[in-house]
Length: 501
Ligand code: TXE
Image (tube, rainbow, N blue to C red; front, side, top):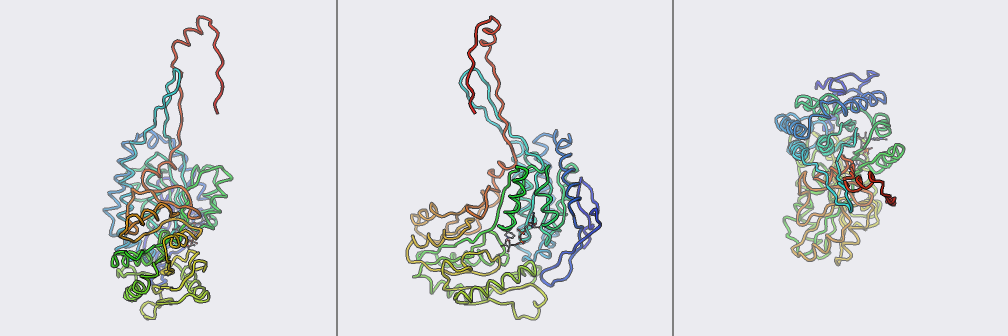
């Protein structure tokens, strides 16, 4: 694949300053897919300087919100035009089934479309004050925004942060995950074609410990949006603290699907399966814990087992149900957790190994895996595995279901399956999760606020809520008291007012 082996900085392509490159593999066969430039600290510095210069470039700062919106809308259009090409590249680079990759590109386009419509609606307020004042607020861009993204939804997650940042008039430096750098580079190309001025979006492909670390500690970065692991999130936050820079962190989860005895059986079954097996379980909001009423447990699990065994595994381009895992590390990690689950005494119902199919031998595949008789304190019930592994737990009453569901350090998403609206809302009100789905999972699009409680992070992305991260409020207070001026001119004594801080 020819992806120039270059970084996208200041609207043009350039090799990394050291001339170094690295390869990205196809996880379906471990073959090299493409070679890309490896950005080091120096390259990040150049990218940040380009983004900083673009902030005051009149081609960006003066074009006005409607035109900014139009440029974003053109990006959405070009993403759609190149949907098939981008989806195939995404599928090859991260292993996901082609249809899921097609959806990723459509959602990426939606992010640009949605935020393009917001660019000219970032209104301030007028605030009535006592006395003769005109007081108003302005929403200004925050400056250079850094975006560090993971490999599970490469283009979607990038666009989730970049589109609102641009809509609000910021500039961007994006470091995609080293495992999946390809579509980010194409987004750079598309943005230029759409008329985004040079330097407004910069893409530095590289690794976390040098390029990523430099970006998060750069003194001219004004906001950091990070999606990834808790461990790296902590480092990002520490780096940001040095420069007193705000961060938005989305750090994964251990989300429960609570199935009550009166649930509509087939849709709950389908929902629970999709929640854990889509993208081979490599989703921050995957439903990786099934918390099922003990009365329903036997039947439900039997059906789920049958369903899991019927899922097709294969290379993403063949459009299977499950593609490969992203990397050797992730493949090892999932197998390690399967070992831990067995050692902890959970009952392996199905899966738990690399598929026997010789056709899949070269790839990083894992069978869909169900663990029954899991107890809440087991590591496989507490820790994020990031693979197609479901931990099954049972409950006897709603209080217990809630206690299990909330009994982890994460709080990203939760699913509830029941026909009883009172029970559903009783749970929804008490669940510690940024998004709650009732008789559904993964619903909602780019419009709905998304983010974590507890260690799943903070700040909300998507929807109008995201814009708060990419704007800063300036309050302007004007004294319009003509009478006071008159009295001062006449030499009347003025009383000194107090100070409100
Ligand atoms: O994540 P990292 P990894 C979870 C999931 C997975 C685990 C490890 O449980 O098994 O994390 O995955 C960049 N400064 N999630 O190692 O390290 C890195 O280059 C700045 C959940 O891939 O967090 C990449 O671009 N940046 C998650 C990004 O951080 C650094 C999605 C994510 O990598 C850096 C992915 C540093 N010091 C993994 N070190 C979700 N929330 O969806 C790394 N990076």
